[in-house]
Image (cartoon, rainbow, N blue to C red; front, side):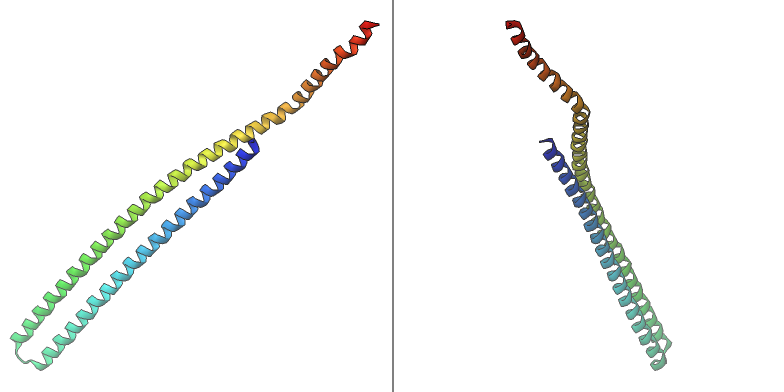
Length: 171
């Protein structure tokens, strides 16, 4: 029975450690995936902003070459600058919004991971306690084994002694 309890505790401990490791790996993978998506979207949006700026610059150069009037060129420059500012603001907002979403998701993931690890830690403590009790009981049995042997020998000798003396008394 004690051996079965120790085996079950060992199995529970092993399972708990495996589950804790799986939770850690799963959390790390999820974090990496979120970070990768965030970096990818940030880069893609940045590339779009740069493409738009390059297109506006081309348009401005074309306007300078084709339009001799300075007033039209200035108006084009103002329009291009406003459009660039609007794109940059939208780009900065998307970085902040996406970053906030990533941080929220990671904090939720971390909270879930901490709960899982806390539960696994509790299970591991229970398994260690069971193993410690089993080890202690096995040690006590080991230490008591010689005494049990001598106690049985004394009890046997005590039960045999009255039988050995009975025939001597009847003679």
